[in-house]
Image (cartoon, rainbow, N blue to C red):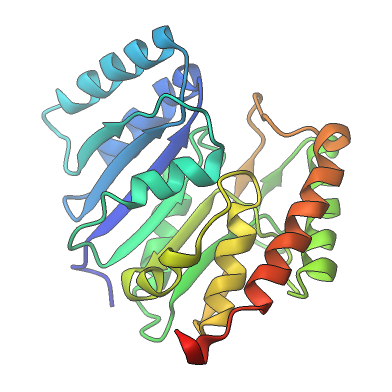
Length: 251
């Protein structure tokens, strides 16, 4: 049960103030005191960082704010995985760590629904949001992004040898005890971070479930199907080999 447990929720961002200006106030206003939000800036431009600080200050000034909101910066752009991991290093006594994308494609109601569902799963180690169209769920996605997502999911399933429908959805929750097991082995700072996280959790015998969420396409994606597909395939293969080669008996 996580009804009274604490959750560290990281929001990775890179030159994303325009999108965060709507999503962050909604997120912070809707989360309770057992949440701590860490906005992890991934080497944004100077003006963007200044605007982000002002945005966070405005959010903090709201009297109705239940959760705490922090921001961390780095000078070098590393990728989503790097931003998430830097945010997770702020982990203290929270019972769960997680992240949600800065674009708000997975909105506050879906985040709360996922947290509520996790409360009844005492043996669960991680929840991966999934953009799967099924009865009762709503996924609004441009066909190009849907195509790139299905290609990458196929790469993960075949090269990573994991029958996952959607490893890249921007909502993850990981129990802190499970995170501590895999944290020393997380190396991928870019787009394939989610894949490495998933494969490591499975390697360590953790129970991971895909949780279908409502999702809406938000302009501004930094991933290109033509530019990134081959690089993604190579990265997935490297991750799979690295994780498969871990000898847990020697750890």
